[in-house]
Image (cartoon, rainbow, N blue to C red; front, top):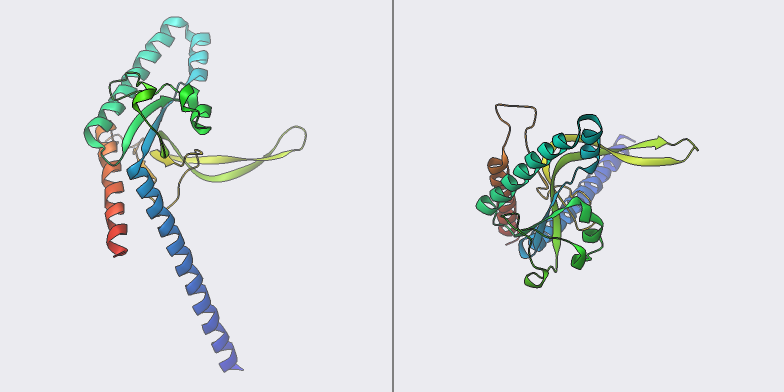
Amino acid sequence: MIKIVTFSLLLFTLFSTKVLFSQENTRKTLATQQLEELADGYLLVQLFNRDRTKHFIRQELGDEAVKKYELTQLSNHKKLMKAFQNHYFFSKVLFFYSADKNHVLNQSFENVTFYGYDHEVVKLDTIKINSFYVGELSRIETDSITYTNSIGESHKRPSYGFSAFIIRDNQFRQLTKPFPYYTRTLEGVPIFRRKENALIKSLQSKLERKHKSFKKSSR
């Protein structure tokens, strides 16, 4: 009896190990493909309009406060653009505002206003987007929370964790490991918080290292 149980446990362990190994290989193959697609395509960086925030500021503090907020917002966007220009070389880059998110989602690029590193509008006839991923400064989606509305319908909403620069697929879905899909800003840790240059340097380094390691292991 003990021999039968031991043999059964051994078979289960071997089967589980084989399944885990297969899943790991599948994830690695997918991540390798995604890295290749990104390297050969575009990273479209989403800049947020924050219209709700502006509306709230206007109601509470007036138009002058909105103008001040917009100037700060534009300054931050330009810092991020310059950081990409100086420290990111893994793929081509364009920037767009979140007001155009649905057009990007539907790949209706003729309706999207794209921007270059100097916040200048890029002419559509100068670019050709065959494949792309989306990047944004946001918060990591950690899990889904189910909630019920007033008429008893259940819906899922993502819950959010730490601040990071996040890479998503062309349907705006957060990627998963082993793809290096996020780079933490370390927001909330003033001494170590990564500003734009350090953040994009780290992003470039992570993508490059992972790309090289996958190529090396596939030889």
